[in-house]
Length: 408
Image (cartoon, rainbow, N blue to C red; front, side):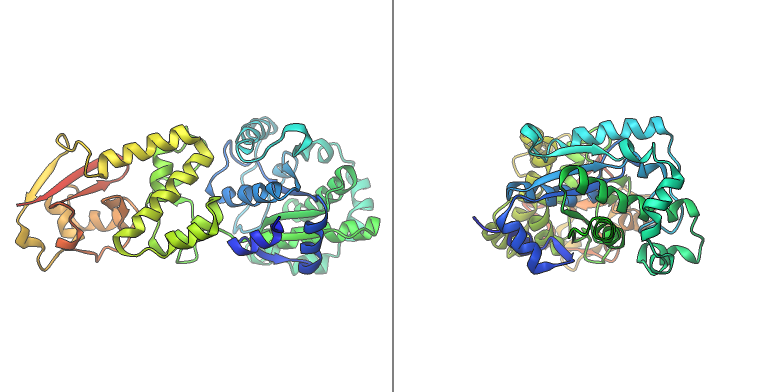
Protein backbone atom coordinates (compact mmCIF):
# COMPACT_ATOMS: atom_id res chain seq x y z
CA UNK A 1 0.00 0.00 0.00
CA UNK A 2 1.34 3.41 -0.99
CA UNK A 3 2.43 5.63 1.92
CA UNK A 4 -0.21 8.34 2.40
CA UNK A 5 2.59 10.91 2.66
CA UNK A 6 3.58 10.12 -0.93
CA UNK A 7 -0.07 10.37 -2.03
CA UNK A 8 -0.43 13.78 -0.35
CA UNK A 9 2.83 14.96 -1.85
CA UNK A 10 1.94 13.77 -5.35
CA UNK A 11 -1.43 15.52 -5.22
CA UNK A 12 0.15 18.74 -3.97
CA UNK A 13 -1.33 18.98 -0.47
CA UNK A 14 1.82 19.40 1.60
CA UNK A 15 3.12 22.94 2.06
CA UNK A 16 5.34 22.62 5.15
CA UNK A 17 6.39 19.87 7.56
CA UNK A 18 8.35 19.99 10.79
CA UNK A 19 10.19 16.68 10.25
CA UNK A 20 9.62 15.46 6.69
CA UNK A 21 11.52 12.16 6.79
CA UNK A 22 10.33 11.28 10.30
CA UNK A 23 6.72 12.03 9.40
CA UNK A 24 6.89 9.91 6.25
CA UNK A 25 8.42 7.00 8.20
CA UNK A 26 5.86 7.35 11.00
CA UNK A 27 2.90 7.37 8.61
CA UNK A 28 4.27 4.26 6.92
CA UNK A 29 4.70 2.11 10.02
CA UNK A 30 1.78 2.88 12.37
CA UNK A 31 -1.71 4.30 12.59
CA UNK A 32 -1.25 7.92 13.66
CA UNK A 33 -3.87 9.97 15.47
CA UNK A 34 -3.89 13.54 14.12
CA UNK A 35 -6.15 16.55 14.33
CA UNK A 36 -7.38 19.54 12.38
CA UNK A 37 -9.22 22.43 14.02
CA UNK A 38 -12.36 24.14 12.71
CA UNK A 39 -13.47 27.34 14.41
CA UNK A 40 -17.29 27.62 14.36
CA UNK A 41 -17.51 31.26 13.27
CA UNK A 42 -20.49 30.43 11.01
CA UNK A 43 -23.19 27.74 10.90
CA UNK A 44 -21.64 26.19 7.81
CA UNK A 45 -18.20 25.38 6.50
CA UNK A 46 -17.26 26.85 3.13
CA UNK A 47 -14.94 26.08 0.22
CA UNK A 48 -11.99 27.43 2.20
CA UNK A 49 -12.41 24.50 4.65
CA UNK A 50 -12.88 21.95 1.88
CA UNK A 51 -9.20 21.28 1.29
CA UNK A 52 -8.62 20.59 5.01
CA UNK A 53 -11.50 18.08 4.97
CA UNK A 54 -9.99 16.35 1.95
CA UNK A 55 -6.61 16.32 3.73
CA UNK A 56 -8.28 14.49 6.62
CA UNK A 57 -10.09 12.09 4.31
CA UNK A 58 -6.89 11.05 2.52
CA UNK A 59 -5.19 10.49 5.87
CA UNK A 60 -8.05 8.30 7.09
CA UNK A 61 -8.03 6.30 3.87
CA UNK A 62 -4.32 5.77 4.54
CA UNK A 63 -5.12 4.08 7.87
CA UNK A 64 -4.79 7.03 10.26
CA UNK A 65 -7.28 8.35 12.82
CA UNK A 66 -8.60 11.91 12.48
CA UNK A 67 -9.76 14.12 15.29
CA UNK A 68 -11.95 16.96 14.08
CA UNK A 69 -11.53 19.61 16.75
CA UNK A 70 -14.40 22.08 16.74
CA UNK A 71 -13.29 25.27 18.47
CA UNK A 72 -16.20 26.08 20.72
CA UNK A 73 -13.73 27.53 23.20
CA UNK A 74 -11.25 29.28 20.90
CA UNK A 75 -14.16 30.85 18.97
CA UNK A 76 -14.85 32.86 22.12
CA UNK A 77 -11.49 34.57 21.48
CA UNK A 78 -11.05 34.63 17.69
CA UNK A 79 -8.02 33.63 15.64
CA UNK A 80 -5.99 36.68 14.48
CA UNK A 81 -4.26 34.63 11.73
CA UNK A 82 -4.78 36.12 8.29
CA UNK A 83 -6.83 39.00 9.69
CA UNK A 84 -6.30 42.74 9.49
CA UNK A 85 -9.03 43.42 12.04
CA UNK A 86 -10.55 41.78 15.10
CA UNK A 87 -13.10 39.04 14.52
CA UNK A 88 -16.72 39.54 15.52
CA UNK A 89 -17.45 38.37 19.06
CA UNK A 90 -19.99 35.52 19.08
CA UNK A 91 -22.35 34.55 21.87
CA UNK A 92 -21.98 31.17 23.54
CA UNK A 93 -25.40 30.12 22.18
CA UNK A 94 -24.46 31.06 18.61
CA UNK A 95 -21.19 29.13 18.87
CA UNK A 96 -23.01 26.02 20.15
CA UNK A 97 -25.46 26.22 17.23
CA UNK A 98 -22.59 26.57 14.74
CA UNK A 99 -20.77 23.60 16.30
CA UNK A 100 -23.77 21.30 15.81
CA UNK A 101 -24.12 22.33 12.13
CA UNK A 102 -20.43 21.79 11.40
CA UNK A 103 -20.41 18.33 12.98
CA UNK A 104 -23.07 17.20 10.50
CA UNK A 105 -21.08 18.47 7.51
CA UNK A 106 -17.85 16.81 8.62
CA UNK A 107 -19.63 13.46 8.70
CA UNK A 108 -19.91 13.51 4.89
CA UNK A 109 -16.13 13.29 4.55
CA UNK A 110 -14.98 11.35 7.58
CA UNK A 111 -16.07 7.92 8.85
CA UNK A 112 -16.77 8.32 12.58
CA UNK A 113 -18.02 4.77 13.10
CA UNK A 114 -16.28 2.34 15.46
CA UNK A 115 -13.96 5.00 16.87
CA UNK A 116 -12.29 5.44 13.43
CA UNK A 117 -12.46 9.19 13.95
CA UNK A 118 -13.47 11.58 16.72
CA UNK A 119 -15.20 14.94 16.94
CA UNK A 120 -14.28 16.89 20.06
CA UNK A 121 -15.02 20.42 21.22
CA UNK A 122 -12.28 22.40 22.96
CA UNK A 123 -14.94 24.20 24.97
CA UNK A 124 -14.93 21.04 27.12
CA UNK A 125 -11.51 21.93 28.58
CA UNK A 126 -11.00 25.62 27.80
CA UNK A 127 -14.11 27.23 29.25
CA UNK A 128 -13.58 25.92 32.78
CA UNK A 129 -9.89 26.80 33.00
CA UNK A 130 -8.67 28.80 35.99
CA UNK A 131 -6.81 31.71 34.43
CA UNK A 132 -4.06 31.93 37.04
CA UNK A 133 -3.46 28.18 36.89
CA UNK A 134 -3.40 28.35 33.09
CA UNK A 135 -0.77 31.10 33.13
CA UNK A 136 1.38 29.11 35.55
CA UNK A 137 1.00 25.77 33.75
CA UNK A 138 1.04 26.95 30.13
CA UNK A 139 2.01 30.62 29.90
CA UNK A 140 5.37 29.99 31.49
CA UNK A 141 6.42 27.96 28.42
CA UNK A 142 5.78 30.79 25.94
CA UNK A 143 8.23 33.58 25.10
CA UNK A 144 6.53 36.90 24.32
CA UNK A 145 9.52 37.95 22.18
CA UNK A 146 9.19 34.81 20.08
CA UNK A 147 5.40 35.13 19.81
CA UNK A 148 5.73 38.65 18.42
CA UNK A 149 7.82 37.33 15.53
CA UNK A 150 4.99 34.98 14.45
CA UNK A 151 3.43 35.95 11.12
CA UNK A 152 -0.10 35.77 12.56
CA UNK A 153 0.76 38.58 14.99
CA UNK A 154 3.21 40.66 12.93
CA UNK A 155 0.63 41.78 10.40
CA UNK A 156 -1.69 42.95 13.20
CA UNK A 157 0.79 44.91 15.34
CA UNK A 158 0.62 48.08 13.23
CA UNK A 159 -3.19 48.32 13.39
CA UNK A 160 -3.53 47.00 16.91
CA UNK A 161 -3.60 43.53 18.44
CA UNK A 162 -5.87 43.02 21.43
CA UNK A 163 -4.62 41.11 24.47
CA UNK A 164 -7.67 38.90 24.02
CA UNK A 165 -6.37 37.69 20.63
CA UNK A 166 -2.80 37.48 21.92
CA UNK A 167 -3.96 34.56 24.07
CA UNK A 168 -5.11 32.56 21.03
CA UNK A 169 -1.74 30.96 20.37
CA UNK A 170 -1.54 29.72 23.97
CA UNK A 171 -5.02 28.23 23.73
CA UNK A 172 -4.40 26.46 20.42
CA UNK A 173 -1.09 25.15 21.73
CA UNK A 174 -2.91 23.88 24.81
CA UNK A 175 -5.45 22.11 22.56
CA UNK A 176 -2.65 20.07 20.98
CA UNK A 177 -1.26 19.23 24.42
CA UNK A 178 -4.69 18.07 25.72
CA UNK A 179 -5.34 15.93 22.62
CA UNK A 180 -1.87 14.43 22.93
CA UNK A 181 -2.43 13.51 26.56
CA UNK A 182 -6.03 12.30 26.19
CA UNK A 183 -6.03 10.59 22.79
CA UNK A 184 -2.37 10.05 21.92
CA UNK A 185 -2.61 12.66 19.14
CA UNK A 186 0.88 13.03 17.64
CA UNK A 187 0.27 15.35 14.71
CA UNK A 188 -1.56 18.53 13.85
CA UNK A 189 -2.63 19.34 10.30
CA UNK A 190 -3.96 22.64 9.08
CA UNK A 191 -3.74 25.50 6.64
CA UNK A 192 -0.41 27.11 5.94
CA UNK A 193 -1.56 30.24 7.79
CA UNK A 194 -1.65 28.20 11.04
CA UNK A 195 2.07 27.32 11.03
CA UNK A 196 3.05 29.51 14.01
CA UNK A 197 0.20 28.21 16.16
CA UNK A 198 1.01 24.61 15.26
CA UNK A 199 4.68 25.01 16.19
CA UNK A 200 3.59 26.53 19.51
CA UNK A 201 1.55 23.42 20.36
CA UNK A 202 4.33 21.08 19.33
CA UNK A 203 6.80 22.98 21.54
CA UNK A 204 4.40 22.96 24.49
CA UNK A 205 4.11 19.16 24.30
CA UNK A 206 7.88 18.80 24.18
CA UNK A 207 8.45 21.16 27.12
CA UNK A 208 5.75 19.64 29.34
CA UNK A 209 6.14 15.94 28.51
CA UNK A 210 9.38 15.49 26.59
CA UNK A 211 7.44 13.74 23.79
CA UNK A 212 7.93 14.46 20.09
CA UNK A 213 4.93 15.79 18.18
CA UNK A 214 4.67 16.82 14.53
CA UNK A 215 3.00 19.40 12.32
CA UNK A 216 2.14 19.44 8.65
CA UNK A 217 0.38 22.18 6.72
CA UNK A 218 -1.64 21.96 3.53
CA UNK A 219 -1.62 24.23 0.53
CA UNK A 220 -4.23 26.99 0.52
CA UNK A 221 -6.67 26.85 -2.39
CA UNK A 222 -5.88 29.88 -4.54
CA UNK A 223 -6.70 31.08 -8.04
CA UNK A 224 -4.20 32.03 -10.74
CA UNK A 225 -3.87 35.53 -9.19
CA UNK A 226 -2.92 34.06 -5.81
CA UNK A 227 -6.23 34.97 -4.12
CA UNK A 228 -8.17 32.46 -2.04
CA UNK A 229 -10.81 30.58 -4.02
CA UNK A 230 -14.36 30.16 -2.83
CA UNK A 231 -15.72 33.67 -3.30
CA UNK A 232 -18.33 34.87 -5.78
CA UNK A 233 -20.06 38.19 -6.34
CA UNK A 234 -22.72 36.84 -3.97
CA UNK A 235 -20.19 35.98 -1.27
CA UNK A 236 -18.67 32.76 0.05
CA UNK A 237 -19.37 29.39 -1.57
CA UNK A 238 -20.88 27.45 1.34
CA UNK A 239 -21.22 23.70 1.85
CA UNK A 240 -24.73 24.18 3.28
CA UNK A 241 -27.27 23.70 0.45
CA UNK A 242 -29.50 26.35 2.01
CA UNK A 243 -26.74 28.95 1.62
CA UNK A 244 -25.33 27.79 -1.72
CA UNK A 245 -27.63 25.50 -3.70
CA UNK A 246 -26.18 22.29 -5.20
CA UNK A 247 -26.72 23.81 -8.67
CA UNK A 248 -24.87 27.02 -7.78
CA UNK A 249 -22.15 24.91 -6.15
CA UNK A 250 -21.83 22.79 -9.31
CA UNK A 251 -21.71 25.88 -11.51
CA UNK A 252 -18.94 27.44 -9.42
CA UNK A 253 -16.61 24.53 -10.19
CA UNK A 254 -17.87 24.26 -13.76
CA UNK A 255 -16.75 27.85 -14.32
CA UNK A 256 -13.25 27.82 -12.82
CA UNK A 257 -10.51 29.25 -15.01
CA UNK A 258 -8.68 26.78 -17.24
CA UNK A 259 -5.46 27.37 -15.29
CA UNK A 260 -7.11 26.22 -12.03
CA UNK A 261 -8.50 22.90 -13.27
CA UNK A 262 -5.40 20.81 -12.51
CA UNK A 263 -5.08 22.12 -8.94
CA UNK A 264 -8.76 21.59 -8.19
CA UNK A 265 -8.82 18.05 -9.60
CA UNK A 266 -5.76 17.10 -7.52
CA UNK A 267 -6.85 18.67 -4.24
CA UNK A 268 -10.65 18.44 -4.24
CA UNK A 269 -11.42 15.04 -5.79
CA UNK A 270 -10.35 11.43 -5.39
CA UNK A 271 -9.96 11.00 -9.16
CA UNK A 272 -6.80 8.87 -9.74
CA UNK A 273 -3.75 10.90 -10.70
CA UNK A 274 -3.43 9.26 -14.13
CA UNK A 275 -6.91 10.52 -14.99
CA UNK A 276 -6.18 13.93 -13.41
CA UNK A 277 -3.16 14.28 -15.69
CA UNK A 278 -5.21 13.28 -18.74
CA UNK A 279 -7.99 15.74 -17.97
CA UNK A 280 -5.57 18.54 -17.10
CA UNK A 281 -3.79 18.14 -20.44
CA UNK A 282 -6.96 18.91 -22.43
CA UNK A 283 -6.97 22.22 -24.26
CA UNK A 284 -9.40 24.56 -25.98
CA UNK A 285 -13.04 23.49 -25.92
CA UNK A 286 -12.02 20.02 -24.67
CA UNK A 287 -11.07 21.46 -21.27
CA UNK A 288 -14.83 21.56 -20.60
CA UNK A 289 -14.70 17.76 -20.16
CA UNK A 290 -12.31 18.28 -17.26
CA UNK A 291 -14.46 21.06 -15.76
CA UNK A 292 -17.57 18.87 -15.93
CA UNK A 293 -15.72 16.02 -14.20
CA UNK A 294 -14.47 18.42 -11.52
CA UNK A 295 -17.89 19.95 -10.92
CA UNK A 296 -19.62 16.57 -10.70
CA UNK A 297 -17.07 14.97 -8.36
CA UNK A 298 -16.89 17.92 -5.96
CA UNK A 299 -20.67 18.30 -5.85
CA UNK A 300 -21.05 14.56 -5.26
CA UNK A 301 -18.68 14.71 -2.29
CA UNK A 302 -20.50 17.61 -0.65
CA UNK A 303 -24.14 17.04 -1.63
CA UNK A 304 -24.33 13.40 -2.70
CA UNK A 305 -24.53 11.71 -6.09
CA UNK A 306 -28.25 12.40 -6.64
CA UNK A 307 -27.87 16.16 -6.20
CA UNK A 308 -24.73 16.14 -8.35
CA UNK A 309 -26.63 14.36 -11.11
CA UNK A 310 -29.50 16.86 -10.89
CA UNK A 311 -27.08 19.79 -11.11
CA UNK A 312 -25.31 18.19 -14.06
CA UNK A 313 -28.61 17.62 -15.88
CA UNK A 314 -29.81 21.17 -15.16
CA UNK A 315 -26.58 22.55 -16.57
CA UNK A 316 -26.84 20.33 -19.65
CA UNK A 317 -30.44 21.40 -20.23
CA UNK A 318 -29.38 25.03 -20.31
CA UNK A 319 -26.08 24.72 -22.13
CA UNK A 320 -26.15 21.41 -24.00
CA UNK A 321 -27.24 21.00 -27.57
CA UNK A 322 -30.12 18.78 -26.50
CA UNK A 323 -31.65 21.32 -24.14
CA UNK A 324 -35.03 22.97 -24.74
CA UNK A 325 -34.13 26.62 -25.27
CA UNK A 326 -37.34 27.75 -26.98
CA UNK A 327 -38.61 29.71 -23.99
CA UNK A 328 -35.33 31.54 -23.43
CA UNK A 329 -35.17 35.24 -24.45
CA UNK A 330 -33.35 35.37 -27.79
CA UNK A 331 -31.70 38.02 -29.94
CA UNK A 332 -30.85 37.34 -33.59
CA UNK A 333 -27.75 39.09 -34.91
CA UNK A 334 -26.10 39.18 -38.30
CA UNK A 335 -23.27 36.70 -38.77
CA UNK A 336 -21.18 39.50 -40.25
CA UNK A 337 -21.22 41.26 -36.85
CA UNK A 338 -18.88 38.60 -35.48
CA UNK A 339 -16.46 38.15 -38.36
CA UNK A 340 -14.07 40.64 -36.84
CA UNK A 341 -15.68 40.35 -33.44
CA UNK A 342 -17.63 42.54 -31.02
CA UNK A 343 -16.58 43.58 -27.53
CA UNK A 344 -18.39 41.82 -24.69
CA UNK A 345 -19.43 45.17 -23.15
CA UNK A 346 -21.11 46.30 -26.37
CA UNK A 347 -22.74 42.90 -26.86
CA UNK A 348 -24.30 42.85 -23.37
CA UNK A 349 -25.70 46.34 -23.85
CA UNK A 350 -26.90 45.66 -27.41
CA UNK A 351 -28.99 42.60 -26.41
CA UNK A 352 -30.44 44.44 -23.40
CA UNK A 353 -28.75 42.52 -20.58
CA UNK A 354 -27.15 45.75 -19.31
CA UNK A 355 -28.14 49.39 -19.62
CA UNK A 356 -24.62 50.65 -20.22
CA UNK A 357 -21.06 49.53 -20.87
CA UNK A 358 -20.21 50.67 -17.33
CA UNK A 359 -22.79 48.30 -15.84
CA UNK A 360 -21.50 45.51 -18.09
CA UNK A 361 -17.93 46.14 -16.95
CA UNK A 362 -18.95 46.03 -13.29
CA UNK A 363 -20.84 42.75 -13.74
CA UNK A 364 -17.85 41.12 -15.43
CA UNK A 365 -15.37 42.22 -12.75
CA UNK A 366 -17.75 40.80 -10.12
CA UNK A 367 -17.89 37.43 -11.89
CA UNK A 368 -21.52 37.92 -12.93
CA UNK A 369 -21.31 37.11 -16.67
CA UNK A 370 -20.81 33.68 -18.28
CA UNK A 371 -20.98 32.56 -21.91
CA UNK A 372 -21.86 28.91 -22.55
CA UNK A 373 -21.13 28.14 -18.89
CA UNK A 374 -17.67 29.75 -18.97
CA UNK A 375 -17.22 32.75 -16.72
CA UNK A 376 -15.97 35.92 -18.42
CA UNK A 377 -13.37 37.71 -16.29
CA UNK A 378 -11.89 40.19 -18.78
CA UNK A 379 -14.02 43.22 -19.81
CA UNK A 380 -11.94 43.54 -23.00
CA UNK A 381 -13.03 40.08 -24.25
CA UNK A 382 -13.96 39.99 -27.95
CA UNK A 383 -16.73 37.63 -29.06
CA UNK A 384 -16.19 36.11 -32.52
CA UNK A 385 -17.74 33.39 -34.68
CA UNK A 386 -15.43 30.88 -32.94
CA UNK A 387 -17.44 31.36 -29.71
CA UNK A 388 -20.65 30.07 -31.31
CA UNK A 389 -21.79 26.45 -31.33
CA UNK A 390 -24.42 25.55 -33.94
CA UNK A 391 -24.82 29.29 -34.61
CA UNK A 392 -25.85 30.10 -31.06
CA UNK A 393 -24.41 30.99 -27.68
CA UNK A 394 -26.00 31.55 -24.29
CA UNK A 395 -25.16 34.44 -22.00
CA UNK A 396 -25.89 34.17 -18.28
CA UNK A 397 -26.15 37.25 -16.07
CA UNK A 398 -25.93 36.53 -12.36
CA UNK A 399 -27.45 33.19 -11.36
CA UNK A 400 -30.83 33.17 -13.08
CA UNK A 401 -30.92 35.49 -16.12
CA UNK A 402 -30.22 33.73 -19.43
CA UNK A 403 -30.18 35.11 -22.97
CA UNK A 404 -29.62 33.26 -26.23
CA UNK A 405 -27.89 34.87 -29.22
CA UNK A 406 -28.52 33.34 -32.64
CA UNK A 407 -26.72 34.02 -35.88
CA UNK A 408 -28.78 34.83 -38.97
